[in-house]
Length: 467
Image 1 (cartoon, rainbow, N blue to C red):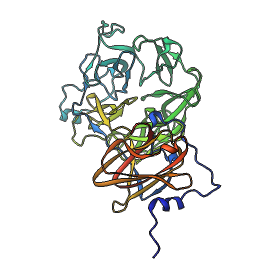
Image 2 (spheres, rainbow, N blue to C red):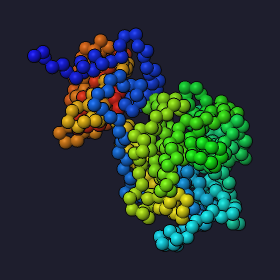
Image 3 (tube, rainbow, N blue to C red):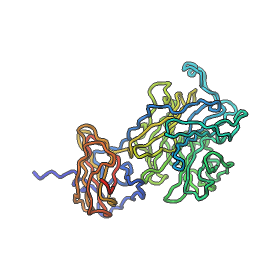
Image 4 (cartoon, one colour):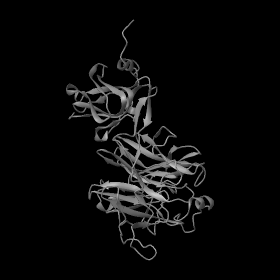
């Protein structure tokens, strides 16, 4: 009987044959991470499935509630949370309805028997809160905007619906360091508090009553915004995520569809952010028959072409107990706060259905570093096999980030371009950037990484000088 071929050699035999077009490589692995959810890194996949990472809801939830007279209804909250290095503060801009019918004091029975109807003159505002640690939030009296005869509130703007806030330190004009984006208009601010009058946007052609959001794409130097479209015209059919772009924040491309679900699972909104050389989207999925919302995960190489990860499976899911702070709806904030020891994903939660009575809250979920999604065995009785495309070895040591259950392991073999093994390592414990190979003589040369995954999930790989 011929000797059994190792899995890494079988993987080589299954690779793209000579002369086949090479996949486009990712351009910028921020922080040195190469996420395996990015299919451009993966050449061979056997018995492997890409699954969502595990989000943990913070035990201190909810962090912030409707406790001011101008916070009639947090509704979807449409929060924008950043950690500003300039003053080492967490900052949150959120959008409550400041003129609405509050649910405070209504019993669950009353909420179920009395139909909620938005009142005439319903109005949204943008409020501001700060925190030293991202957990305990304060609502400062800013004395900027009048509400019922007083400016002793934390309002920064009245009127905009679903404003997205971008901190843009790359803008040479300090008066435009902060940007407030909607499909209809733009505003600017030096400090995030005092904003210019709205400047009308042209070309988008979308009235977008959802969480609009904006980011700057380094590959093109252009700004990209995400807005709402409708399948059958304004307010008709199903909700769709639209994309628009601009070089000057004045003239915008006509918004075009980039992601949709179906009539029962609609793409309500999608905050988008850049992470490790790819773009990730936190999709608010409106379950129309239940009148509830959860959050799913999608990724894109370029902000145009999007792939959902495990469609129909919540990334941040609702509580199973009616009346809990996030039983009804979950809308992820734009955008996550990335820390060395993990990722903070803030979100707006509510304890009632989307179109019914509900109280709203600012909430927090956390994720391990690089833990958005990873590969695990499809059939648990057999190892999963992943072999990457050639990638430049940029440092002396290979690392992987993984979760390993009891008795599990990840066998890592580093190969040269010809498929010859350079180093092997076995990882038997969960780790973040766990050393998985020494490659001293292969620095700045292309290598491939082969992963045999048993009772484990692997999220990312990369290279570092220090083991």
